[in-house]
Length: 519
Image (cartoon, rainbow, N blue to C red; front, side, top):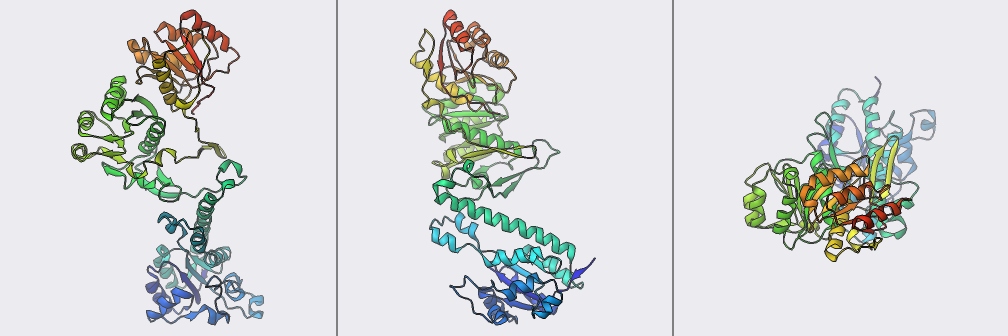
């Protein structure tokens, strides 16, 4: 295996961690060091002999330091193939490029909003040198991070850096610089209306940074992790799974998926509402004037499925609610906050995960503007379903008009059906979820599951559907179980059959005009 013998290196790093020790090792192994700006000062003050880049190029830096390393002698030395042309041009080879970039992402995380300050923190010379070295990795090795210093020194001591290691550093370089550019693009896009809509772009980049390794994926034989999209602190929810965690063991892949489902449902509900989720589908939900009453009603709707589930509150959990929660086996409880008394009681269960989203109270429910689904060969991207069912205008299409209490229940049903896997049917009574049919291949089966779940509670309840009825069989089944009102989007060529069935059986039905498929 051939090796790169390092005789000359250029060091230009923003993060000085470990750089003095690394540079001393280079000098001890006969490497000449070129350096710039703050890096040169740091090394010189540590007693390390190094050459200013301006002495190497014969040209002082200018434009306030914007131009230092963008010079033919620098990039010629990096990109040289060590051939006769390089000798003829008197190009001195640079065998090692040690660079880490201006921390653009860090100042974003710290809340910097001034666009001029953001732009000044965009590194130009650093990525250019790294990419030049990465392209010419047979002759020049790029070092884009301090984590590789020890490995590089150990190889230099054995006579040189292996071309295999240099190639790996090249791949790491392209990963780092492409991620860096993607973060810049995604942040600066927020300063123009035209680029805010991801669907308007022919080409997109989405930077993803690992925040959390999970125990495993959906199943024990699958690995998993949570990655976040870097953003300003008030938009970025990655800390929700870290600093927002008040108690309990680590989160799993399925936990985070279910947490996302809880938060999306709460987004559409009123203050003090409660929702319980299993496998991303709501299994209990209610809207009352207090979180205590909301939980009691949600639990009454399906006390069996809530066991081992996730409970979310759009409000504060007090001691009275905590005492009820404490008697049930739950995986996670999410709330905007917990009173000290509630927290003291619930944290006695060491494994019970408690999450607070108080910091993002105004933002957390609207963090998504688009959704991504991995498919063979690529991804599907769509706008988030922004329709809020309780704000939709309902059109009564039957002879019988639903009472106001039934309309309220229908809107609550449609709010939940939006978040249930299709085909979806939801049964609601008194703003309480009492039956769900999720993910079925036909609508009448979904209705049967939901009604069987509701049992005798279905008498006088309402039914919500995520899509139209292709036949009147769902209406007839609902009527036989005591359902009084139905909401569905309408739009089937056989709508009249369902309307006629409702009129004959004494049901009211509303068309919402909005389909809420969720796959």
